[in-house]
Length: 164
Image (cartoon, rainbow, N blue to C red; front, side, top):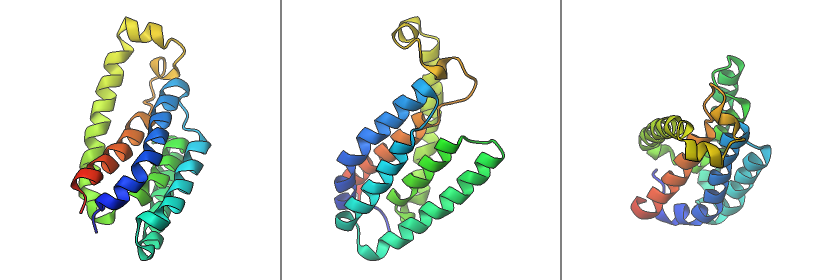
């Protein structure tokens, strides 16, 4: 089942501010706050009661569990950070299983754009002078929140216009 415009529209105003906060916080501190994870989980459940058919909610929560397990395995081998694993897991229930291919393509495109943009802005003196304390400028690690947050935001935005 693909996302409906109805559910995407319900989630969009609550989720987008958290997505922006996650991207900003990960660039500045190289951390995704647990409050962002808890907030997104609470929004999924509270808004989901109105936005989704009730029979779909347990399946979406199963997606959370699967992505969390995979994320922690990736964290254990130091492929991703713990915050990235937790945030990806809490994002998972927002994606309709029928949109899996679209979501993966969307994430790949957003990740590529985020990496390129981050690398370019890292070398622009005006940007560096405006944000000198950002940890992401001085580390070799990539702030994955810069790609994860916008992926969810763009998915819900696309769902409001092109949802079933």
